[in-house]
Length: 168
Image 1 (cartoon, helix red, strand yellow):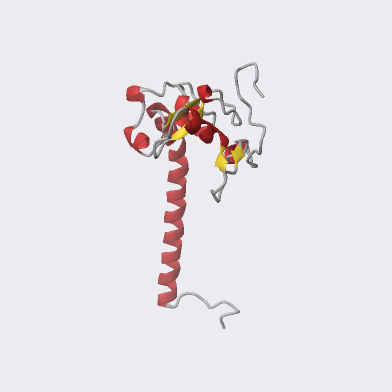
Image 2 (cartoon, one colour):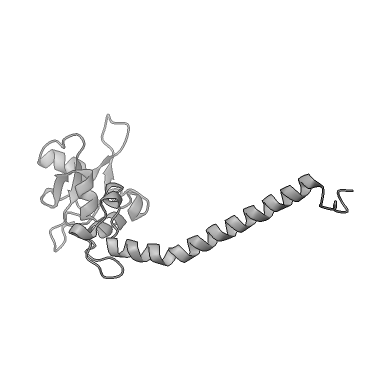
């Protein structure tokens, strides 16, 4: 079936599953092969040539069951993911942080970038300032608890603590 946009819709079997888990792609069984093959990959190889190792076939039309070779392009996995609409692609295309700061150039932290994230320096500063009183309170509570415990151990060592009823 050919749509108005030129997609050749695969009318055979379609892989089950959610869209985020590989569902919606046309599949076909080929004699002599033990497992199914994706219809769009088969159409590409049949009409355009082999797909290089380590490459994927991307649907330019974003229709998973389309087998029109004009709508298919061989790309890297990274490029295929970034062209999509998943979390990674939306995150990579984001130009402003949640507070409206630019996510470019000197405003990005190189250490966060190296780990695959993007956080602007201004937001890092704000986050640290907001969490500092909470961290100091936790440290103070921990210090006080340690002092109380040390005092208890000292009193116990000197024998100045009366045993509790269940200890007697």
